[in-house]
Amino acid sequence: MHAPTLLIVEDEERMRRLLELVLKPAGYDLILANSGTDAIRLIQDQASFDLIVTDLQLGNVSGMDVLEAAKQHMPEVPVLIVTGYGTVKSAVEAMHKGAYDYIAKPVDNDELKIIISRALQVRRLAQDNRVLRAGLQEQFGFDRIISVSKQMDLVKRLALEVAQTDATVLVTGESGTGKDLLARAIHLASPRAQGPLVALNCAGIPENLLESELFGYEKGAFTDAKKGKPGRFQLADRGTLFLDEIGEMSLTAQAKLLRVLEHHIVEPLGGVRGTKVDIRVIAATNQELPDLIKKERFRLDLYYRLNVYQLRVPSLRERPEDIEPILNSFLDTARRERGKRLRGIRSDALALLQRYRWPGNVRELHNAVEWMTITCKEGEITPEHLPGTLKGTGTEFDPQHSGDRSLLSLGLSVEEIEKTMLQEALQQTGGNVSEASRLLKVTRNTLRYRMAKYNLK
Image 1 (cartoon, rainbow, N blue to C red):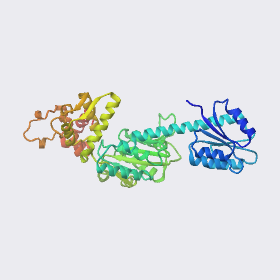
Image 2: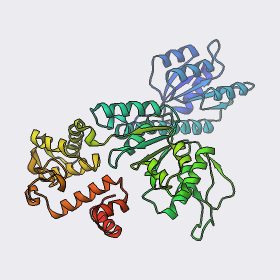
Image 3: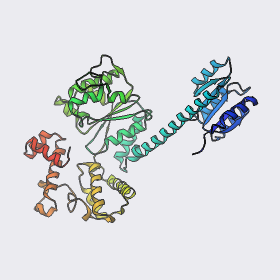
Image 4: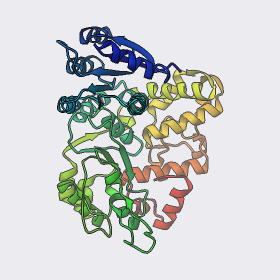
């Protein structure tokens, strides 16, 4: 790790020598400039240094000019102003223009080293954050949404446009289509990218805990509240709050959410005073919210608040041309992370994948690829390596269209047929357990047991 390089800008030789004697033994590499003109030339030439220490009074080209050049050509480099008696007001003005800090003459050597060390630490943190954001962009940005279809190209283009605004976004689409990935991409492409992205799955938290998770609580709000806890709204301040499965939220929580969206003030449970928050909300659902509104399970006024800008993610069966690039992306990951020696997929096996209806969408395709990498460790993937629901049929099992073939001829196990029927019933009813149980002629409890058995939502 190289020693930090400092640009010292000082027109007085005695002061320049003094700074050199103090900072060189402290482990810094120094570049010395005896005028503002020389310093600006070095800055414009993009010389490599980590911090600038400049006197404010430098003759015709002042320390303020050096600061402006630094902010223009290398804004990430902190600038420390050295000021004499009577020019502190100008140093404060420099702070308003972006200087990191100032120190008055006569310079206290220990104070100077502390301020420089602190400024370099802030610079390192900024660099680490930039690397982290670049990694997040690579993992969750729009480039990670693999597609070649016109439908998804349109969705990504619209999402990129709305990302530049602060509008509330409602993302709709079937389960497994990648709504959460789209929400993360919107956040990372937005002006709030440096702020937090806080996610909450409204279906994954019991109703009695949802409000405290969203809005937080004060100490003593209930029996076990030994100390206060901030909610997801407070944690998402200056960033984005992603509410997944918004259709599962209780009416009570919906009313409180509506108030926050209207006034941007959060009232923790047990609190007497609200907290102002600066957030952007992205909500997602695989349900038809207008249908829930008719059934009085979702508030109409909240729907209008959330549905400022709606993005619908098409199902995988609507864009079969995306199956191959998504599959290849999953296979690349398997090769890279697990050393799989797979050359790809044979055309007849790919044709089966493209004819299948994919009720679980991209998530189901990912699970299928996991299966294929187990059954085919190297070479090409053939139809024999596909899961039983795909092998030899190319479509989901459908008793009404199976013709004269016996169920045994389909090559499916009892569990695979049962799971496929459950998936189809849930798909046809939009995930409504009551309606799906009537369709399958079983009780709700039996259906819930079967869903848990096959890990179905």
